[in-house]
Amino acid sequence: MTFKEDFLQLVWKFQYFTKTNLRTTNGDELKIIQVGFHNHSEGPDFRDAVVVIDRVTLHGHVEVHRLASEWKQHSHGGDPAYNSVVLHVVWENDQEVLRNDGTTMPTLELKGLIFLDIWRNYEQMLDYKADLPCAHGLQEAPEIVRFSALEKALVERLHEKSSLILGLLKETTDDWEETAYRWLFTCFGFKTNSQAMGELAASVPYKILLKHRDQLPVLEAILLGQSGLLPTESEEPYVQYLIREYDFYRKKYQWASSLRRIHWTFMGVRPSNFPTIRIAQLAAVLSNAPNLLQSVMQESRDFAAFKKLFKIKPGDYWQHHYSFGKPSQRRVSNGISSTILELLVINYVIPLWFAYGRYFEEPDWQDRCFDLLQEVSAENNHILRKFQSCGWSAQNSFDTQGMIGLYKNYCQPKKCLQCKIAQTLIKSESK
Image 1 (cartoon, rainbow, N blue to C red):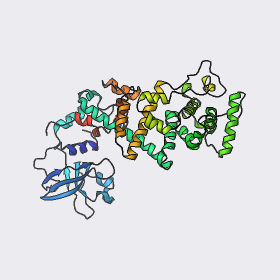
Image 2: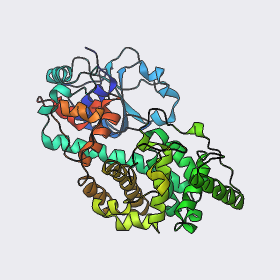
Image 3: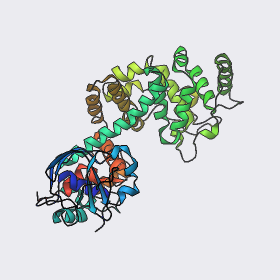
Image 4: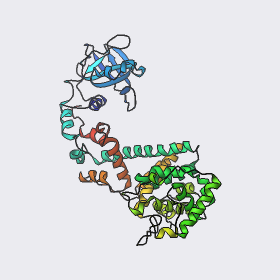
């Protein structure tokens, strides 16, 4: 039987083993009063446990290993965080473990004690070689359990994304306007150009662009110039104008752009997602929104309001160009597609709301995030198709974001036993 350490952690957490005449490896009588709180960060696996060994009540931590010798392999003996361990729980006691004072560490060996139905369920319900280890048992998990796991994964995903925003907030010395502006650019870069877009926004302060918000060509000149995508010369009159305008403002504000064309990805990107088009669209958005933060935080309370904010029309040049000097044979789209708008709600608005709520300790923003996600259509990508093939279909973006969180944080790293779905599938009936 092969298993990982997290299986033993689950066995200890839910006490899936016989406790009749329980003794340590030294033969001392053992009673478990409190298993402790599962610790998913650094330090002992379970904190604040209570056990009685040889009629002495001990308060402290519990560490779990497959083999007792892993205590030494993991250098726990020299780590002060493990000084308060009162019980070492192992599958096999292959080596005596000593405390720093030379006394034997109380050890519980689980070999031969674990309920048989736990072994059976673990073997039958989880296939760690599969993309979704619980795929063939997924339908057996009650709907309420799946929803609970989905919601937990969604909240964790929102914490991850909002932490990036709070990091930006720290960089901008708590300037929410500047942070919302930089996050917008990062999101507009999507996966391929997000880093370059973020660097572009950081090179041009939002306050400067606000001064020229009623001059769309000037916004285009500044942003395209700072991006390094604006050519140094051109035969096209409008491009010549952009070059002159950028040169003026570059000297006025003493900008030194570190971006070049090599920082941007065009290869393999659809023309409608070229960085030149996206920057032109961003210029139009900034020209359309007199106050970006207020528009996103207060006025975009539902998807319809958000679409109105981003219902923009880029400059005339970009009606017929995807990039400089290459007119398109057909008319370029006038604005941002519905699909892209939905992605912006998911990746821009929702994390910004969540970060705002965390920063000001206003939990109502979290409820707003959940409500808006349920208004947005379900996404479609390779991760979501994995769940769909198992009979679990997403109804909206609340579901899809939760599924992506489940896959990336639990399925992919094989942390199945920290997921409520897998815990339910292998739940013992012997207790």
